[in-house]
Image (cartoon, rainbow over all chains, first blue to last red; front, top):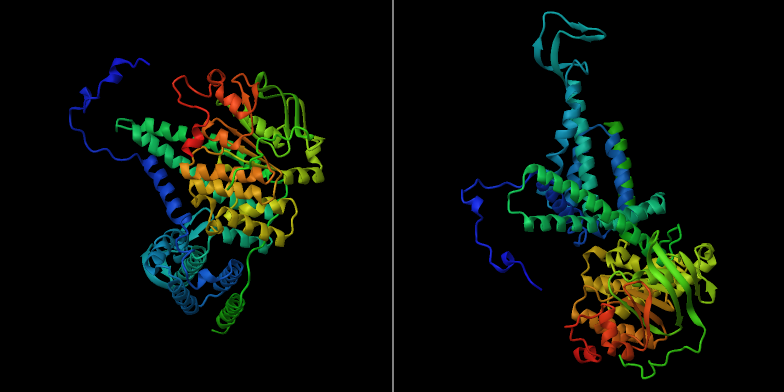
Length: 312
Length: 273
C-alpha cells in the first residue's frame, strides 16, 4: 500500500496560521448544556447510589412506598395549618436522614428551585390588587382608583396578610410535597418503582414501555456521549458556533436513526422470545411485617393530620 | 468439559428440522441479500455459517428463527411450513418459540428488561410456564452460567462479557432445541471467548442444535461439525466438513474469509486454546 507523502511525515506542532496566541476557548453553550444533561442523567438518574444503600426506607416494599406517598401527599395538600405542615416536614427530614440521605443536598435541591417557580406563580396574589385583604405593608397610594376598561384597581397598592398567608401555604405545600417525592424516589430503585405501579391499576403495557424507555435512555445517552467524545477528539478549537450548531443537529439526526434501528432490533429480540402483543410478567415483591406496620402507620398519620387540621 | 468423541456423526439420516428450498430474500426491491438458498439442517447438528460482512448470514439466521420471511421460496421447520401466517396461530407460535432461541449480535438490543432476573424470566413467562417453574428455571440457569450475583442488576450496568452470558441465559431458560448465535464472539475478551466455545461444545453434547453465524475462523474448528460458507454474492458457496473446507486456502481467499498474508491454518485455534 503506497501512502501519500504527507502521511509519511510527522506533523509539526503548530500550523502556519496559528502562531499568534489566541484567547482560551470556552466550550459552546449547546454542547456544554447537552454534555451536562448527559452527566446529570448518568450520575443521578441511573447511579441509584442511595437506593441500593442499606436504610430504613430502602428496606420497604416499593408498593408500600407508593401507597405512603399518595396518602401523605393527599393529607399534606388538604391541611392548611402551617405548624402541622412544618411539623410533618421535620419528621420527614428525620426519616430521610435515617435512610442515609444527605440533608444539605436534599434541602438545596428543593428550596433553591421551589421558591423560584411556585414563588413567581403566587407572587401577584400577595398584593391587594389581585387578592383584597388586610394590608400589611403599603407600597404606594395614588390620588384616585384606576379604571381601565373592565379593570378597576384600588388607589392603594399593598401587600395583604391573607395574600402572604396564602402564598406561604402554597410554597410550603409544594416544597414539602417535592421533598416527600424526592425522598421516596431517591430510596427506591427506578425499576422497582415502575414495577410497583402495576399494583395501582397502571396498565402492564404502559409500565413495560416505561421500563424499556428507562433502559434505552441509558443506551442512547452512552451513544450520545461517544459522539461528543469523538468530536472532541478531532476538534482543534477552530470550529465556529454555526459549525457547532451543525454538529448538534447532525448528532440529533444520527441519534434518531440509531434509536429507530435499535427499536427494530429490540422488537425482533422480543419476538424471538415469544412476545406476540401481550407482555406477561411476574410479581417478585414480598410484603413483610414491617411493610404492613409502616403502611398502617402512614395511613393513620395522614388521617390524624387531616383531623387535627380541622380541629386546630 | 469433555469433547464428545462422536461429534463428527452428522445425523443426516433423520428428517431435517429445517429445510430451505429456493429461498430468496431482499430488504429493498432488486437488492438480494439471500439468493437461491437450498439447505437442510438436522437435529443435533452443530452448524457454522461463515461469510464475509454483508454476505447474508445474519439474515438467514433471522429467517430460520421466524423473524423475517422469504421473499420467495419455502422454509420448513419441524415438519411444518414456516410462514408469517402459520406463526399467527398462537399454539404454533408458542411451540416454535419454545423450540428456538436467538442470541443477537448486539446484546444491548437483546437485553431490554429492567433487571437481569426479569430478562431471564421473560421468555418462559411468554410461553406460559407457571411462576414456580419460571423461578426455578431462572435460578438454575443463573447458577449454571455463574451469574447469580447479577440477577438484581440492570443490564446497562454489565460488562460486555457479562451481557453475553446474560443473553445466553435468557434464551436457555426456555430450554430450546435449536440455538442461533449471531457473531457470538464479537467484542469479547479471550477468556470469555474461550468460555463461550466450551459452553457451546457442552450444549452440542447435550443434543442441542447449535447454528452460529460468524466470520471468526478461530472458533470454527472447535464448535463446528458442518460449515456452510456464503459468498459475497449472497449464495451458498460451499457446504461440508470443517477440516475439508478450512484446509482449502484458495476457497477461503476467494470468499474473503482470509487475506493472502493471513497465517490461518487448520488446527491453529486448538493450539491457541
